[in-house]
Image 1 (cartoon, rainbow, N blue to C red):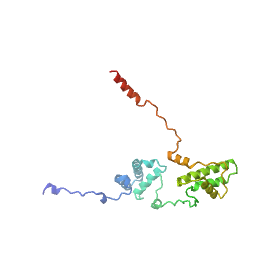
Image 2 (cartoon, one colour):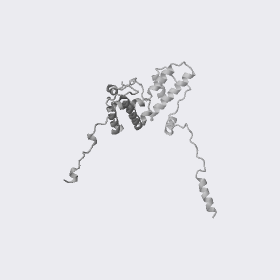
Image 3 (cartoon, one colour):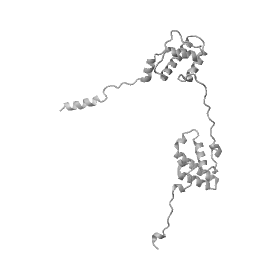
Image 4 (cartoon, helix red, strand yellow):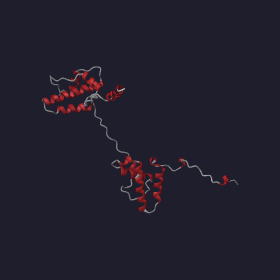
Length: 228
């Protein structure tokens, strides 16, 4: 019999034939560490191995360390990889499968009705707050500010046509006739609003580049040429 015939043929080890990885991000070696940890009978030694595994998966996922509940998340992952069968003295209680699978309660979405969508809900709150103020120059100034905000929002929504009369009519309707512009109040022109939107804010002055950036080097080369 030839030597090749006596050699034992080892079967190929394919990933589909291996046990399922519960958390694939940690890899199969970490999964085998967890499986080995569950086979240890001594509870103190099993706890020591569990803490070592926590150190390893924390090194593999450093972003979890920066979170407020990072250590709690790592221990939860350890229990999940053990299918909640690992019994150790951890710093956090072992979660239950039902606790991890529970969904958070839906966040209630405000369903308040907005009369004019292009003005938004904030403008309506401004008007309600202005209505509570006492009559005087401060309230008149606040009313003018609200009208200018409404005009800016209107220009964003419709750039074809805009007039101060439209803003005054909408302000009167939104306030229920309680807010009126002062006779000497002036609104920002639509051309200035569009020009500001196209150019953008200019809160920071651009530093001007001073001369002499590359000219000195060029003059130095010319100086060397003139020597010969």
